[in-house]
Every structure is written in structure tokens, then in C-alpha cells.
Amino acid sequence: MSVDRPIFDRLPGFDAPWEPLGDFPTPVEPMRATGARLGAPDALWIKRDDLSSPVYGGNKVRTLEALFGLAKARGAARVYSTGAYGSNHATATVLHAPRAGLEPGVILFPQPKSHAAVENLRVMLSRRPALRALPHWSFLPLGMQWQALQDRRAGIEAFQLVPGGATPEGALGYVSAALELALQVEAGEAPRPRQVLLGVGSTCTSAGLLLGLRIAAALGIGWETPPRIVSVRVTPWPVTSAFRIVGLAVRTGQLLARITGERRWGRSRAELAAGLEVDGGQLGLGYGRPTARGVEAIRWAREAEGLELDTTYSAKAFAAALARARAHAARTDEPGPLLYWSTKSTAPLPEVEEADWRWAPRAMTRWIERAQKKPRA
Image (cartoon, rainbow, N blue to C red):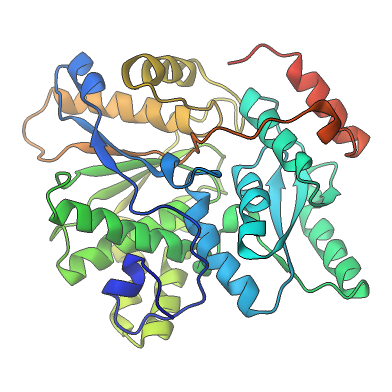
């Protein structure tokens, strides 16, 4: 299979089902206005995965390219995303699945209310996906099993995605993204970053980058010593533990080794763990709960860069990037800027009328009603 992605171009023998969805490569740019405020114009750069698709961008597009390809290879007609009411992964699945010839489905549980979450849920419901609403996240395993049983009885070939697509196949999308960044550095489009900062929720993006940056170094692309990954928690331990992130990266390397026949891509846990830091200082009261530093990061990004963030993911990651960039600006002994990986879509969402979501179960419509009464963060 020939696909215009670095993982196909740069890894001999790589051949896996793939469904191109995004506009790649995404830009890598200096955040000069932010740097100027900090007294160091080149202290912070940004990888614009928020622009990965005008349909719905963000990091989930890369993951879905691999997962939709796998779903179609297995003969699926319907693909389910699983997660919280305002899940970016579920929103991306619902909007992109028809482009791949797949019927979208979602299995969702409630989350803390926010403007971004309610807008995502409204958009999802407007597309009328196959839907199973759960009362709590703890019901997810049972809900997935029950939905699979119902689909089998109905003769529907369905493929279920775990939250965030956090499987080795899903992480391949960000192995390719790491190679993409390395190629941009090699081409002189950006300096080699010292650290790459991003939000970590389901671990898929962090795991793929962690492995991919080391593969780029082994291939001699972009750098000899790979940048350090700093994953900023937006969901609590143990979901976002370093152990889980590294474990997924290890399994992704093992999958790559099987696909390509190259054993060297099966990197050790010790090597991968040495390149990862998990920053729990921005989590606040938990997933979906705004923080004061996150709200300040939203204002900063909007005023300085014209970039819109959300309280759940991108604001917390950017708050960590700002804090580290401030410290970095005062030092001269560590070469290379910081790179903030922008993972939340900034593509305009489709317009939704109230009638488009009123068909949903009452628990969902009541959640939307209550969320819409809250002031916007």
C-alpha cells in the first residue's frame, strides 16, 4: 500500500492498512509574540496539529487514519468511538468516519461540563450516530460488550475503538508524526526542540511520539539525540502514569518490528522511559475541571497568538509550556527551544440547531441544557 506519510516513506517494509484523512505535514512555527513577552523570542515553538483537517483537526486525525484503515481491513461497516460526552476522539470519529465509508457510532459517559464539551456533544448528536449512553465511566467495559452483542445479533460488522484509540495501531499515527517533525527540522523549518510538551489523556499521542522521536534518531533524521517528551496530565493517575505511556510505546515498537521485520524498532522500556517526563502540576481537580492557570493560558494564547484553547486539554498543556518557557528564557546552558504540540482542533465546528440533538436520551439532553446555562470559560 502506498500512502503519503513518513512512516511509509522512511520505514522500509512498513505496510499497514491506512485511511488518509488529514492535511499533512502540519506547520511548525515560532511563537514569537509569546517569546517576546517572555524576553526570549525563540524560546517556544508550536506544532500545529490543530490544523490537521478543516473538517475536524487535532491529534485524533492521525490516530484515526490507522484505526479506520484497520477497521476497513477487518470488514467493518460501523466504527464506534468510546469516551466522555465531549470527547474529541468521538467527535473526530463521527465527523470523519463517513469520509472513510464507515458508519459512525459512539458509546459515551458523562463528564464535567464545559463549553468545548457541550459543543462537541451537540455536533456528534447532530450526525445521528449509532449511540449508547452510559450512566458512568465505570460502565464502559460492560457497555462495549453489550453493544458488540447487539450488533452481532443485528448482523452488523462493527469495530470498537478504546478511549482515545490508545492501542499500538492507533499510536502508529504519531510515530509518523514524530518522523514528520524530524523531517521538518532536517529541512531547516524549525530548530531541534529540547522538549516537546503536550497534554496526555488516553496516552496514545505521547506513546507514539516517544517511540517515533527515537526512531528518527536511529534513522539519522533531524537529530542525534531525540527531544524529551513532557506529557502534561489532563486525566489522573494511573490512566496517565509513565508506566502506561511507556508500555504502549513498547507494544507499538513490537508491532512495528513485526510489520517491518526490523527488530531494532522494538525499543526497551528502560530506553523509552528515559525520554519521558509526566507533568502532573496542571491537572487541578481532575479531568474536565478548569484551572486558574489554564484560564490564564487561554487568555494568553488568544491575545498573543490568536490561538483558541479549551479548558480540558490544550489550556493545561499550554500553561505548562508557558511555565517552562519562562524558566528556559532565563537559562543559556540548554540548547534548543521548547515545542508545544497543539492537539485540540481549531477548525470551526458545524452549525447545530436544537432540533439536531433533541432526539438523544434524556440524560444527554439534560446535560446539554445544564451545561449551556454555565458561563463560557
